[in-house]
Image 1: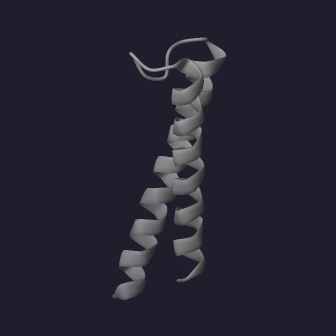
Image 2: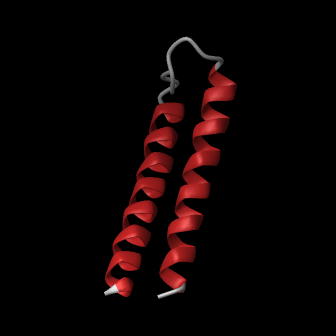
Image 3: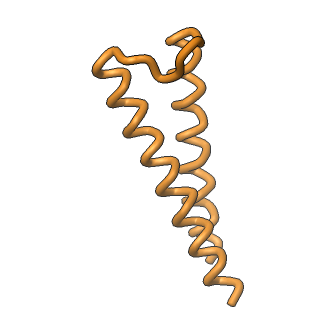
Length: 65
């Protein structure tokens, strides 16, 4: 049963990270703001960082199964 939870958590984290990276890339490509009221460079950098970390954690959890 624990492996089912790990697969779910790994899949959810991986999908979130990938979606966040795609969304950030699309916003940056269209020169649209990633976050309102924040520096464009800082918001793009932090969003990319969180996307990569989330994707990496998801892949790491899936390798433990």
